Image (cartoon, one colour):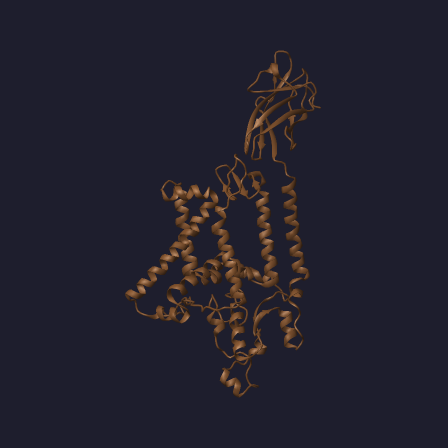
Length: 480
């Protein structure tokens, strides 16, 4: 039996959020974070970094064509993807650290959805005015003036979305060259498709959906409770101090009857997700702390102490209710859980720095022919064939030497020379940022059986580096 009437819906319709402009320490901090993060995102592809004549000069570049990742002085090859994995692990642990210490501060300040939503909300204020003006315009009938404002505002949305997508593709190709080719219609089709998709998603998520992404789409609010405990700082309305609410006029008449909250609703008006922090913890709170700025301003105007809404731990809330003095903030931040997270985060970072500092810029690998595994030559010697790959991960060509370790009496030659020039070592110049395949043949004395040996690779320059590839020689004799 259907108990729902046709006029009722399973879902509450969205109520547009028109947050009011506010000034204060947390708002200014949000301005700073937005400026820094957007500056990094839009500006990084244009930073140049001299790596010599054999490598690109873009500071940060994901070179898919040559399978490289450049970040200033660091160059990552595909086989070194564990560095990227390490960075992702550090990012995850860093998120756990921030959440356990100060709740959803990542969501409130640094999350891309928050940053771009904040940017679009400032565009709204620039075009339509502050909260009351925007609410009045929304409720007004469609006139040419309203249409003009909407078209102008949405045009700015599209410009922001377009530059967001445009900046993204610059991380995958040389930025000046790509911009030139893009506007001439000569860029790869994938560039245009990527920009179009990112323009659409940026405008949709940041310009129209906004708080719905944080409340309904993002999984992080639903798992953050596992990262938080009673010692985590979070934005809290101190109801024991603010309730019962009463207007300023009423509280002046009966000061003992009402709390500090004068029910001005400014904390609701400034909230970018439209929640009322006075209703307690809720999934829509991204702990941006703009409500703290708003409440502190109101408390200053009515002559009452700040902190009616503040960053507070559950433990400190209980202490304050009991009349005990609050603890210093550093005690809430420096506690075993956050120190463990920070220790793990630091250990991974130091391990990656050590690995970067000690890694070889050369590499050698060898694979024997399987069919046939060996050949008997006319003089009775045993020949094996190998495909040897030498990798030069530096930004300049390097002269290298390959020599045999083990396999007594054996000699080798390459496919470009003859057996008459066979020797225990071969020299070759490997181009910069390249992997050079070599076809090598090894001839061992008659009767040589299967045994292990190695190709040793050594650079012949001032910065001596070595690497080894262990392989097995196949022969008709007994294995050794």
